[in-house]
Length: 176
View 1: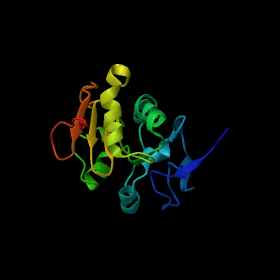
View 2 (view 1 turned 135 degrees about the vertical axis):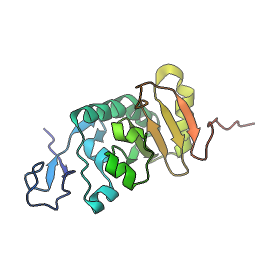
View 3 (view 1 turned 180 degrees about the vertical axis):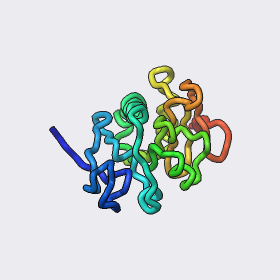
View 4 (view 1 turned 135 degrees about the horizontal axis):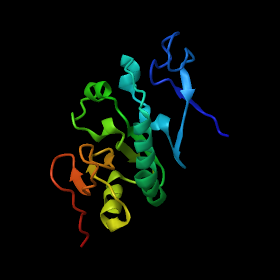
């Protein structure tokens, strides 16, 4: 079995007495899908620097597993590797990074990703062209990344919204 460790998301290795990692500073990482691990969704420079508790509940881990398997893996299959720049955020972490008070990041149903071998807009085109083959709630195109939400936290629905960070609906560019 491939046993990997990740920094303790409770104390970030700073406490000798931590109930979560028992003072080891590390805990076992979890494989969520073939290409994504839990550590990718918990990593947060802000949480680590400020010592903010970032341990997910079991239901959040299952939602991250659903996000990785049902949305990120198909996108990765089509466009190549994805780098998760922001995943799960506990409420204090979300507030510290200036996230929305209704952010799907806090439920485990969202991640910000950067395609390693493509441009962010290619994710939007893929989702647009996928029809009903892929389900998602929101995809928001930023200049450097795409926010991908699998489900709306309040209802669990999948609205299939393609949006731009500047506001408004994203539509594919037409090539003449």
